[in-house]
Image (cartoon, rainbow over the protein chains, first blue to last red):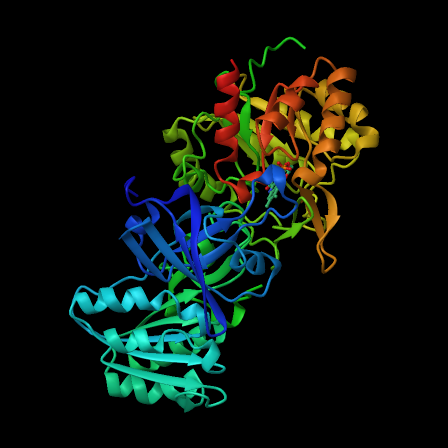
Length: 277
Length: 278
Ligand SMILES: Cc1cc2nc3c(=O)[nH]c(=O)nc-3n(C[C@H](O)[C@H](O)[C@H](O)COP(=O)(O)O)c2cc1C
């Protein structure tokens, strides 16, 4: 990895926290990280120095958007579903609060060389890395179709934004509060045919990724899945995020979600054995 | 003892990366985490590749972490082919941590590593707190731990150091340390993760600032009661103040472990601060 591509460990600062639906969008000034960003990578955040805190474990967040040249310097935007003690603290931080940021980490989405047809499948806040990907794919001349899913409208990420970049956007919610009532599994077969997708990109819960990978394979398309599992360190040090895959030599292996992923070829993951805890 | 093992660190840098907390080294290096470091201890390597245990493997605990990785590693062949060459080319002093199922297997691992260019030391992970039932040689008794040291020592080239990381049972540490020294250990590493349980009841190690005061006591006791045996400290180190405290009670070098999970630059920063002292 060339030095200007590698991750950085920097002192960052909270620029803003905005509530959008059920999520919080946290914008962080993180010098150098926005410039190195590629869609599918993530950052690790810590809120205190180790000498000052009883809670040492950092947390990983997808990078949802970058602005390399804002008036406050380079910023990154994260989508936070505030539930844990850590995330509740994070979204309550006032502007200017210091945070330590490490990133961009992990292997990004592989992007096609040819201007092919791409179907992007996202569910809930975890759809975050698909939006910058859609922009890059469009810049490459790809046809981009998007399928967004959520339990309800409040948990749906970015349908408006997707309409700006994608040729078609389909929304499904479990309660039918917006879009079509249904799930990713219901909507995938028809969309794959209609978009004539060559590549499927998926981001969301494990079941959604599994469904997208399986449907892509049936349809003869490649798939790239952004896997979100618990990552104790996020930086490849602790072996706490094993993912069962079939490696290129056909042999089963356990690799690290944070460093060997988080984006995997959908046909390489042994989905039934994935444990996201 | 007649042989002079030399200093345990490669430079005057007393800060090392502890076993199991530094990935393959590359991940830390990408973040500047190896800058100014006196040595890198690998995660524990076994004869055959191991898959390790189920998730969760590392969980937050007050002022620390509980871990039950279960010794996931690529085995000695995978390690020699895929991981050691990078560490050697990086020019860092490498200590390879090993565990084994029998004395013969320990001796075999030691022989192969001792012949591998670039291995400065072997660290015996004698009682991994997270691997009960993993079929390893039981080295909880001081006399058994000493047998492991003896078995590896016999065929180890003179230039390769032998470090022993025993069970962190504070009551018998001095006795254990004496036995290790007599069997030919060049240094003792104190402490391993303390015996703990994961929330679901699997055996685990406890690491981080929560165990710092106990590590300090263990290092102090062994350094004062077994003065011939160099002590390499580990346990709860997050910054240069912690390193100084352990050096002050007699450690010759200090390993940084789980603090790297919180801040991958912790060891490099502690090393830089200490250089500023000099
Ligand atoms: C995630 C994790 C994995 C570890 N793996 C190993 C290992 O493979 N071999 C070993 O000897 N010690 C292992 N340890 C123990 C550390 O090397 C060290 O002795 C212990 O964590 C105390 O230091 P600390 O408080 O700085 O973490 C591990 C610790 C952690 C947190």
